[in-house]
Image (cartoon, rainbow, N blue to C red; front, side):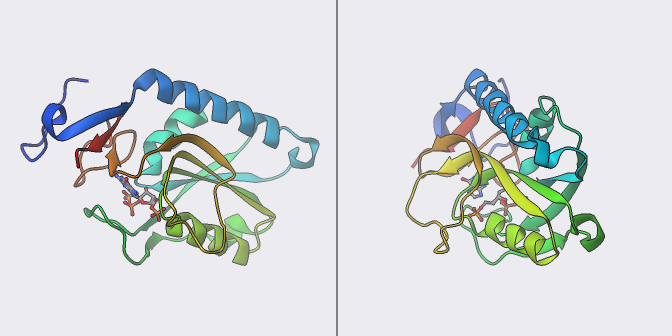
Amino acid sequence: MNQEPSPSLNLRTDADLVINEDTIDDAIRDIATRLNRHFGQSQFSHQNIVAYCIMNGGLYFSGQLLRYLDFPLQLSYLHATRYGNNTTGSDLKWHTRPNPKTIHNAHILLMDDIFDEGLTLEAIDKECRELGAKSVHSVVLTDKQHPRKPKSGFKPDFIGLEVDDRYIFGCGMDYQGLYRNLPEIYALKP
Ligand SMILES: O=P(O)(O)OC[C@H]1O[C@H](OP(=O)(O)OP(=O)(O)O)[C@H](O)[C@@H]1O
Ligand SMILES: Nc1nc2[nH]cnc2c(=O)[nH]1
């Protein structure tokens, strides 16, 4: 894509294209097939399924994924961040917590762009369980490969693509608040 919105980053010289648009779309369709199979099981029919987009990074992936889901669901969002405009994470800050009434007795699907150190998704999963969800599943577009994962062993139930241990952006993920709209995934050059 021909886009150079920020003088602080030149896509051609400062970043590597790591996953192209077709590969990402194939991965999203594959995740959707697995989710349709899972939530198409009889135990979920006539049940309340709530899909939460984790803002902001989950927005692009959620929008793409939802096109391919074929089971009835309610759509909502949560907002928790721990990176801000930085490339390393700190404590999780909640901006929009789940509504307890929505969660109680519902089957929850959390949708996010990346499982990196996993603290964001682990905390949101915990919150949903404490609020009485019947089940909580999570789906991520990317899973960053490194050993710094949650000590609890928590991991997403559905994963699209594995990515190397580099700071990535595009497909919902930002570099200093920009580039979330790129349909490919890039990594900052070391
Ligand atoms: O696995 P972790 O190490 O916890 O990181 C993953 C989280 O980091 C990003 O959110 P961020 O805090 O950058 O906020 P954003 O979604 O607004 O970009 C991303 O969208 C995930 O939610
Ligand atoms: N944009 C972006 N956000 C993240 N949050 C956690 N890891 C990453 C990453 O590699 N890129």
